[in-house]
Image 1: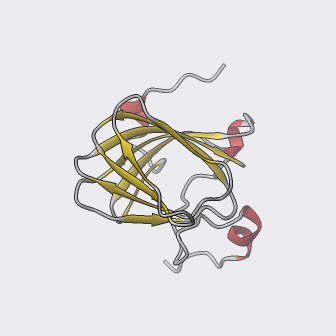
Image 2: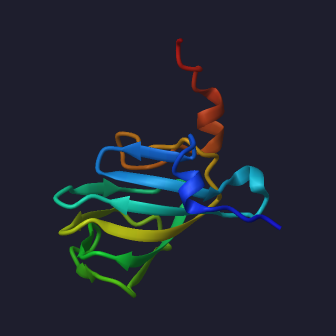
Length: 137
């Protein structure tokens, strides 16, 4: 059994911050669940263009409001508490938070922990991460 506290995760390197969002990575690949689970806040006034080419994601909105645009169709959907969206076809999209949006997210395959979006809006595939050089100290 795995039991974790969100407030504890927020104090570790499993709390990943990038441009326009912060994500507490509650479950990761090493946990062996077959998916990763995150509590993510997307910040008001940002425009987050994403395209998960290597992952599928589902997102459940807990708090906040905004929109999500499907860039393939141009459709815009309202985001508010109780709404779930699933990027089941590696959908290229833009999230536009009007207020901070608190979400619960699941990724398949699971992320390893420190991923942030690359220039295309994707998290790298794990094989790509293994080839990246370690950061200089």
